[in-house]
Length: 402
Image 1 (cartoon, rainbow, N blue to C red):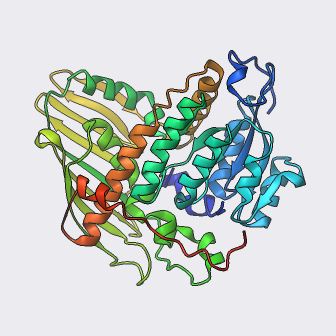
Image 2: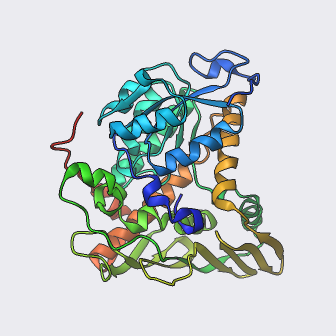
């Protein structure tokens, strides 16, 4: 996830990385997990031993349904620190760019991928081909080819009867789910206009270091590793907006820049207008690194029969001809992750390999990339043009250890 009270530690939490409990339950479909026997917990490997990965591990363990048996990170010290913390034996702590491959070659049931987004497509595809269930951090990728790769990995996982879940906390919250059920039922009527915002006082004003090893430690400021602010962080509000719109945008007009960050860093603000089918218009803004700003992940959509409002740090509700009182999202940062962890296990147990989180994650990620492209261009980009160009962000790997 991203920011807020807990999220202000998120840059350190997933610093990576780069290439990167114990109660027994009976599974209804143990044959769906490679090497899994009934009355055992799921054996899991962590790929990416930064702050977010280490924060998530106890949430998995507290369920009593998971045991971490392997970990991988580009940096040996981080892999060893995580291994010590979660009692992972030394031979199953892997490092280097290909460390995740050695982890996937080892006996385990599932992987949790918490590396910089640049590496997600390659690592997720390899995990699916290795027959592992996949629990993947957002954003799923930094460019169009990466998003399409994740879509294919989701399809392959379903074919191979493997679970593939993308960890968006808002989609795991029952208030969001109920409000969206009502939108789907037509309670807003025809959608007319929406607005989504992501102001954040965090993010710092850093510049990518020249050394490739240090770039992996400060990956957020490196465009190919993070995908820029609009993709790595602001995708949360765009994910809710596209969830409500339930469609790919047709085109986007964008502006933005690097007013607060030094040259060579990612941008600190974007302003993008999206046009969706049926003339639904979405106005989106995001800004970071501004002291005193109120952190917000919000979306509001107006329809012919009412309005829906959502805020990650506040309330979810619908007003209009068919109101929904809604309520506070509470501790969504933690509780959303806990729900996803629980539902991941339930999907494995029940053999539910529909993998319904993949397609909406691809859509919202591509929507963020469309906004980034329009912002960089300072003008208009169509969805079809973006897909046809297939622009790939390239990372210089020279000098990094394999």
